[in-house]
Length: 343
Image (cartoon, rainbow, N blue to C red; front, top):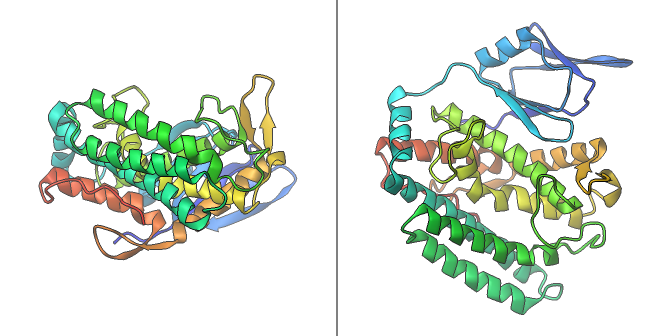
């Protein structure tokens, strides 16, 4: 089983990265140089403009350390990957399935069923833990609707039908999302999901966490020999990691939405940590981004029992486990792709 390594986040835009022996070297103007050993690193995520030395890039490729570049505001730029691992026959099978609408639908349906199941669990937890702070009738209606939508998604006969069902589930889920914000309701008011750019603080927070998850799922898929760019639900598009977006559908409620709600409800962040631009877009300030990254890393350490493997694993390994299960299905070792169903 793969171990959960550390991810190093470079949040300072003026930082530059280099290599010194077996250590990564971080230099910034008027700041003492910092060194971190590479041996325990699983990935490096850079929010800096100055970049990474070719020597460090080569070492990351050699050591299978993922290297991802984002803008200081969290917009994805690029990923550096080395030689593709895994059996070429697995990728050939992935490509064949992606060209077969029916075969693709079998995988896509399970991803969306997993997403709806986990959305429903989030709402049920709110009803259980905070019955006096929510509109119980509204939550009950959405919970029932999500149950029906999951059943319909399992029987969807086309990608178009599945897309419509997924949209309905998102509408039901996010219609209740704002009520799960129990603290700082003014600063983190939520009415609907929006992006590109996010128009309020909670949407900015969600979008940032989704970018982090996309990168980790992409790395997990590449790690088992699958092509993150060739998906079964999201259409192919230059630069789009379609398969990573497919798989993260089922993981977003568990790994991202819970982190966002906890950060706000536990007052670990506040409204002052966001920049509201004249255009209406909202950005996360540097200090708040660091707090989010810390919470993200802590979330990944949580131990859970994987519903399919029946083994105790940290949440941070779920993308890697799901990538392995998808690879096993494509090889013919499993009868179907088992989505991750949170508790």
